[in-house]
Amino acid sequence: MAKVFAYQLPQAKNKSLKEVKNEPKPRLRVEKAAPETPYISRFSFANEDLPAGDRRVEKKLRKTLTAHSYGKLQTNLLHIKAARWFPVIEPILAAYRIPNDFKYIVLVESGLKVGISPKGAAGIWQFMPQTARSYGLKVNRHVDERHNLRKSTVAACKYIRELYSIFDNWTLVAAAYNVGDVKLMRQIHRQNQDNYYKMRLNRETGAYVYKLISMKQILEDPVRYGYNKNKSLLAMNND
Picture 1 (cartoon, rainbow, N blue to C red):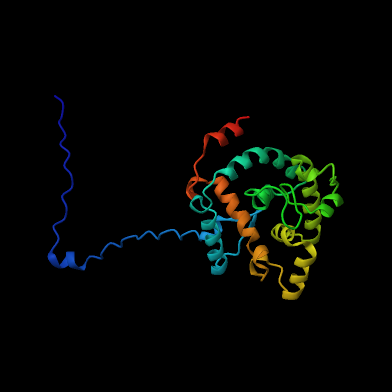
Picture 2 (cartoon, rainbow, N blue to C red; picture 1 turned 60 degrees about the horizontal axis):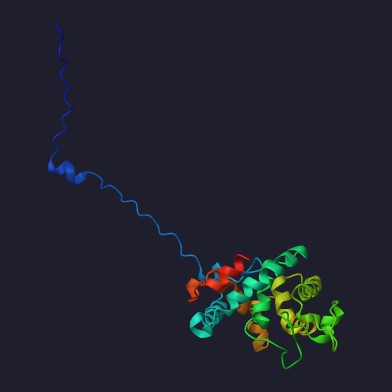
């Protein structure tokens, strides 16, 4: 005859009120919230970070991004031109070992305007005639290769590489592209400062890199800044 075994759960010990009161209270583990990522750390130019914790730089960047939102510019022309120009520009930049972010110079320089500037600069890289000739472009009454996308980009890359040999810093190279190497070097010596974001420069040059970063942001994340991906842009990307 099989034996039947009954298993009983152990009974909890009856505790007195005094014992319950004297028991140590369990410690609640409070998870610390992860520190918020600083706003400025989301942005960079040519893999060079902006100075963290600098409120003046952050304020200036926010202001520039707002100025380049769709509500201010109200055009998708930038995206259309980028779709046409970037496939030509990007491999040339790579061949000259220049950071890809330099492609945004053409949008800042000539993305929203056409023709020759009042000072005589022309083409998507906005070369002055003498500068263009010094980097191998033909500029005369019959031919102006500043308007040739491929040739002018090669010339721009030669110029940018030369600037890098002087400054050894891509952010300063971008600033020098705008103001010229001699003028920028003069300010570096005068201010004893070679950090672009901490220098006091003329209004246009002081805003130049911020504009490049803004162009980069609205091209990489157009929806955040009020732009929509339109059919013309998609069509050009598929060509």
